[in-house]
Image 1 (tube, rainbow, N blue to C red):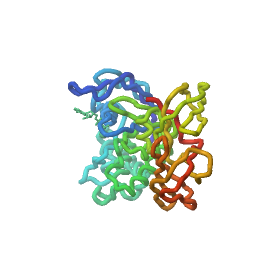
Image 2: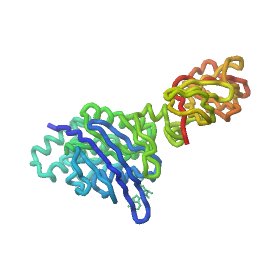
Image 3: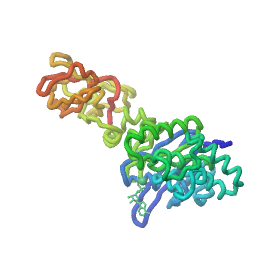
Image 4: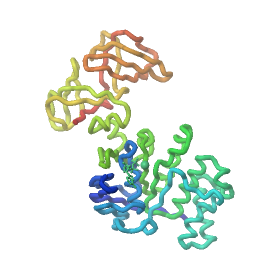
Amino acid sequence: MITVKAGSVTFQNVRKTFGAFTAIHDLSLTIEPGTLVTLLGPSGCGKTTTLRMLAGLEHPTSGKILIGGKDVTMLPANERDVSMVFQSYALFPHMTSLENVAYGLQSSGIGKKEAREKAEEGLKLVGLAGMGHRLPAELSGGQQQRVAVARALVLEPQVLLLDEPLSNLDARLRRRVRTEIRDLQQRLGFTAVYVTHDQDEALAVSDRIIVMKDGEIAQSGAPRELYEAPASPFIADFMGEANVLPCEILHSNGTEVLVRVSNIEHRLQSRAGRGPAKLAVRPGSIRIGSASAEGLKGRVLHSAYLGGHVEYEVETDVGTLFVIDHDADHAHAAASDVTLAFKNRGIAVISG
Ligand SMILES: Nc1ncnc2c1ncn2[C@@H]1O[C@H](COP(=O)(O)OP(=O)(O)O)[C@@H](O)[C@H]1O
Ligand SMILES: [Mg+2]
């Protein structure tokens, strides 16, 4: 039987320098047992370094790391009770998939028969029952990835670490494999730390996302929170396209504000105070109507029919707005005068 331990993870004021370069500044975070948390950020922001410190492949310059409540800061990788799924899968090409999965178990001292039984169960968990005799070269990329996940899971780690696990798969397979990983994680309830630079992937698989920038946490929260209430222009832009507009906060009561953008006023949840601010508006959160409707006046610069929706660029006196309208039946042609109104979701006051 493969048992799931689901440990927690804590970083306390972790710093990591490489010579004179500081890759991670004062990182503190907590990951609850049984959740899938993604480290998301542009290349070079410190995701892999953070994961490697958790795995024991790098040691912090200062600060503490705890796994399942135990201080592991100075423990070597093999005493940490974590397993890592690498981007390259790192399967042994001359071993069958069953042997690959059983290998780590046998080197940890489990008898050959029990290791094979566990490996078979691991392959079954990832949907590869009956494929144990195949060599990695006889499996598709997605199947090799599943062998790598099975190999990590049979070690019964407190935390499963995945570093850009989909980057060697073609675009079509990526969506399927990410769903498989998420399903397996929810079904078995293990703790997972998942690294990616792809915001769609992060939104699709995560309980919580930690967005990193230049070795620091830029914002963390549930996928919906990051998408709908970004705290900075960086997050607004990184989590998907956003129009960032100048606005004036007219009223504020600590939880709700009334903002003015050009000639329109809009009420939304925000803790911001009165005065000039910026508003992040998702392209899908703008309603486009005829020139006679109430709202922000504009003129269509471009419109593109994309099957299920129409994309517009609309010139207004607060800038050119990118709009996605799912009502493809009532398209507005280029050069027509239109009116824009804000929907109730996907609009956030941002600072900085
Ligand atoms: N062993 C190392 N020596 C020197 N610099 C490193 C080393 N590992 C990572 N870095 C630097 O630390 C920063 C973060 O790297 P990394 O954690 O790999 O980023 P990410 O995985 O987010 O792309 C980068 O600027 C990288 O060049
Ligand atoms: Mg990396």
